[in-house]
Amino acid sequence: MEKKIFTASFIIGLFCLTACGQNDFDKKLNSLYKKTVPLIHAQELSKNMTENKEIVLLDTRSAEEYEISHLQNAHFVDYDTFSAKAVEQFDRDAKIIVYCAVGYRSERIGEKLLKMGFKDVKNLYGGIFEWVNEGHTIVNKSGMVTDSVHTYNMVWSRWLEKGVKVY
Image (tube, rainbow, N blue to C red):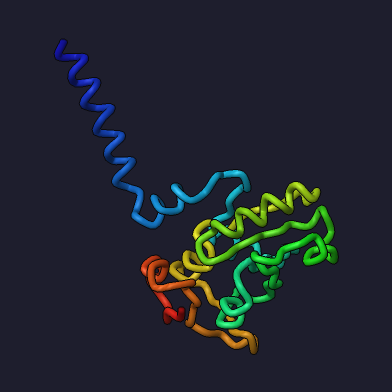
């Protein structure tokens, strides 16, 4: 009996440690994502970009959000008006990374890209928020480095820990 109680306590303890290791932002993202598009984390994307790997970055936010800031060399594809025409210039075998503010809208676009026959599509985990929170640079519409991030609205702005919040 004592052995069963100890084992149960141990398992519960491990579960609590795992749950406690997840921050609120991670919990929010896990509740939003359907996990239909593979994820790439900011650190891995940054490394790939540094190594000059051929990557197509697609910013799936609104034009207003994109103009405030975006990842360098990102192409704008509007979430609300997305169509095949927006991505017709990209090779179906290209490495495509989609992102938005936190990754929800970009996951929807990623699903569409996969259905269109793109073979290597990944969603940036945590979107531009996590990118900035981890200290990576972004640029404005003039291509100049900026610390301003359009946070969609005041509610979502709580998830941006670094940078200047614009909404």
